[in-house]
Image (cartoon, each protein chain N blue to C red):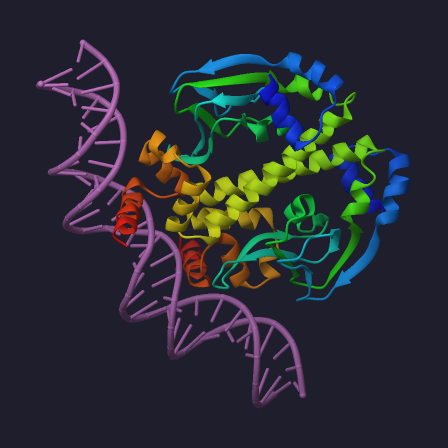
Length: 191
Length: 191
DNA sequence: ACCCAGCATTTACATATGTAAAGAAAACTA
DNA sequence: TAGTTTTCTTTACATATGTAAATGCTGGGT
């Protein structure tokens, strides 16, 4: 569990005593390629820490078209965060793109610890703030940049992921069709 | 100050004792149409509560093109939130579109109260979580919906704002040109 | 009441991206 | 290894949206 402890501690310091309680809420869990960790229309209860593998988070519009919102790689938190904190049904899906190893916990168990452990309350605040900052950056990228610029950012942000997952998932992340991504790639190699 | 107290208290309950300390950090402030509350490249220090008026939050890309990210109307918190919590330079601008009345406070003064007031820490967590939920919804709208659908949502989300500000600000919020918004409006009235 | 400046709409044209379908390449599977 | 499936690229065409410029409208200031 040291990896989770380090992950949390880097965001906001956790007391040893708090960690002794906190670590008990986690259980190991694995997902096979294609399996879902989060499904739309369910109310999220579990969150997880991804030890290895790749998970995509995606939305479906009313016509069934999918949009990949985010890729989770090793050492990141997964779960339908909006649903966890709002207790409204998930609109998001999270699906393993490769076999995954993770550690999961119940969000209610976590929040039940907050009254007695202000360091945890602060950790959750820092996490929420960090999520917000990341998301804002992504929002700006989406509206301010061209698809080819977003592609360049993707490549920097997720090195080697491009070799691990199909192009059409990347295209969906960029908000374009595989056709268009192919055009961009062709142009890049020529120029 | 009762309006701010009510605003906070609705998000997460605040002790009377906490409020007695908290309320002292606020000062009244006003902006004239066109003035800025937040400018890009500065590190944000102040946050505010908007009592009346309209403020737009917008980004500029490297070519100077603007994108309106959000409109603040009465009874909402303003400030470069990402910069406040990350202490990185703002990428955002916030500019009064009408004369505005607000109440402002220093963010450092606020955070200095957190160690002694867990209810405030929780309030900040709830605010961060709420911001995240809102932002996620907006992100989904941007990538999953057509411009005309986003226009319909804008009209519901900001009733009567359409009469208060120029069309080109709305177009920028929708991520399209005034030309295109005009086409959408024409189509709507015909159909 | 008039005028001007700011704003909205329209037009014509250019371009980026989408859709659909076919072909090529790569990755699995038996 | 051969065969099957999945993925990627390419082509041809359709469409949404952008750009630039002209026109039309309107409300505030003097």
